[in-house]
Image (cartoon, rainbow, N blue to C red; front, side, top):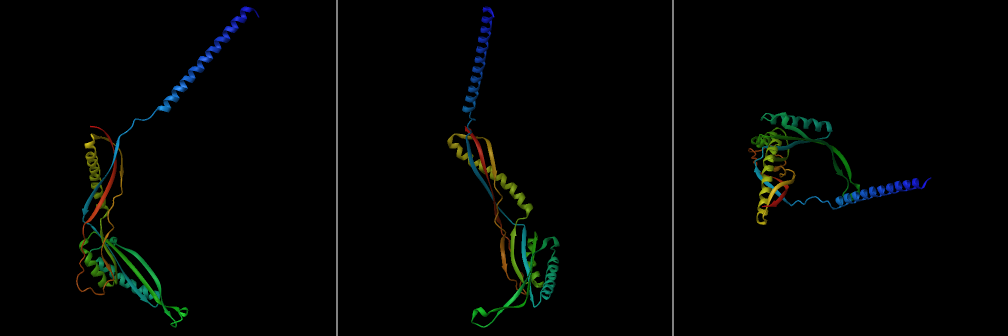
Length: 262
């Protein structure tokens, strides 16, 4: 190999080394710049205010629920069931004669229980024996209707036909009325949250510029209002008065508003 060839090869090698060094340096600079960009990036800060709004309305109920039943007892389960079925059929027929449909009547419960009588000397207590003396049958009806004015007549008619137990009478809102009220209250609750936010921001020189989130709560209302409960009399002397009263229903919302300088 001549001296000239050696010089050319040495020059090419030097050029390759310098080029590789430059490329690596550029890559390192790019990686460092990207790392710095990722490390120091942060989203712009949002100024917010969180406010809870509520709305309440006093609503008259449009649904009445009456739970009543027939209890019978006999020495055999068959006799107890037969007597119970006769009284319950008469009760249901009498209630329907008032204009209550079959769709408004349902069975809320049915039980057959043995009845025991404790016998034995007194004392000692450990000598007591349970003697089977019969069976008790309980059948319970649930009447749910929007005919509120019939509530008293239903009780009187049922008792007159054979019912000997009235568990409860309560007033509530029908699903359709609940939905309508909920929509109206939701709108009012959101407006209430906006009004509260504006009143809080005004002395601070801030204003609402947007909405970040809205959290809707469940529609709340008191449980059905009981107005009557107790054992039925065999023959009511006068018409039973049953009165409904308004119920307060409430809904709340939590709104996070975006705020800025006025």
